[in-house]
Every structure is written in C-alpha cells, then in structure tokens.
Length: 239
Ligand code: NAP
Image 1 (cartoon, rainbow, N blue to C red):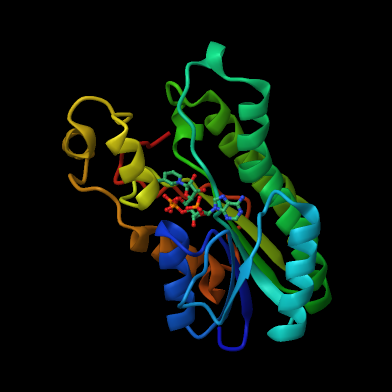
Image 2: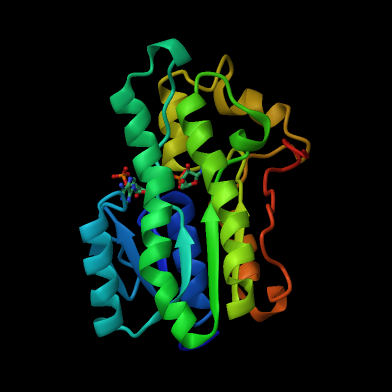
C-alpha cells in the first residue's frame, strides 16, 4: 500500500486516530481532515467536513502537498441524544450535515482523483445504531443509515472504475465520544460496564478494532468486497 495517499476525516480522535495510526504504519501517506490537529498524520488540515468550500480547498491542498488521494475514510461525526419530539430542525440539520452531507462532500471531492487513478477505496464509518435503531438518537441514526445507503449506491456506480465502497458500522467503541456520553449518563444505568456485560465478547470495542477492519477493506486482499456493511461490534448487533 506504500505511496498511496489517504484522507481520514475526524482523524484527530478516537476511531479516526486509530485508523490514521494504522494506515501510517501500513505505509500510506495520511492527511487528516478534522476540527483539531492530528500529530501522527503526514499533514493535518483544519476542515469542517460539512462545509463544501473547506472540503474542496483542503482536497486541493492535499493534491499539491502529498499527491492525489485514492483512499478516503469518512469517519468525522457527532452524536446526539434527544427525545424525537424535542429535536429542533437546527439540531436535525446539524447532525445530517456533518455525518451524512460531510460524507457526500468528501466523496464528491475525492472520487475524481480515484477515477483518474483507476483505483480507489472508500470506507464509511456509520454506526450499528443504524442497523438496530437506538432510542433518543433518531437524528443520529438517520444520518448513519443514510451513510449505509450512500455506500451501497456508490459501490454500484463506481465499481466498474476500480473503486470499492464499504461501510463499517461500529458498536460501542471506547472513545472520547463514548465516554462523553457516559459522563452525561446517556448510556443508561451502569454506564459502559453494564453495556460490556451484555456484549457477547464481554469487552468494549477498541478504536484499533475498527482500524483493523478499515485497513483490511483498504488493502488489496479486499478488492472483491464492495457495497458491504461490515459490522464490528463484539456481537452486539448481528442483523
Ligand atoms: P470522537 O472521539 O469524538 O472523534 C470524532 C472526531 O471528529 C473528533 O476529532 C471531532 O472533533 C471530529 N469532528 C466532529 N465534527 C467534525 C466536523 N464537522 N468536521 C471535521 N471533523 C469533525 O468520536 P469516535 O467515537 O471516534 O467516532 C468516530 C466515528 O465513529 C463517528 O462518526 C461516530 O459517529 C462513529 N461511531 C462511533 C461509535 C463509538 O462507540 N465510539 C459507535 C458507532 C459509530 P471534536 O472533538 O472537536 O468534535
């Protein structure tokens, strides 16, 4: 995989950071698009993925700084917890614009470079909540379900051009996002420990668990896998 240029969104924290570290270890040149700096990437770009101008400008800078990107991991995301009837239109739009529209914008900006190369890998980090539903997260769940649909549609459209598109819906991964939800009491009684007790493999997921799956999907061994939903969730969701 040496010499390939990858963009990882949300690569400054949690799952995205683990994916960045893994791809760097695998020999890729990694650019991170995040609101925050990432020290382990070859280059870190301050990008709000929901802003089309920022995304397009940053992709142009990656091309100039590092070369044309042919790997894209859409991982930047925010969560949200609210009763459905209390979700304002602004809150709904914010979740959709970062999680789903951000994925759309990054794909639109990067796919032309993959088409030129005749090769590309897109991995979208959705959520197991989109497979099983999740109380108090209807806006988040909808944004992540949209990522799964987008993954399948892009796989069909760009498969003939050598681009694979897959999605990993993580379940219960120990990251700052998860711990922030726990600190607010949003994981329910017993917090993370109680959730671990009902997870078939009896542990929380690690960001590296997602990075392992992403690295596989990006590698040449996965060239016949596209349009797939690859659950990494300790058996919490087998649907
Ligand atoms: P995290 O630790 O909060 O990392 C997410 C990163 O994305 C943060 O650096 C965050 O910056 C950045 N970000 C947020 N909004 C952005 C924007 N508009 N543009 C660019 N960067 C932005 O979260 P995580 O747990 O690693 O989650 C990574 C992805 O996995 C998310 O899409 C999440 O929905 C998904 N996921 C996580 C779990 C889990 O159990 N952890 C389960 C299912 C799905 P700030 O910190 O400044 O916001």
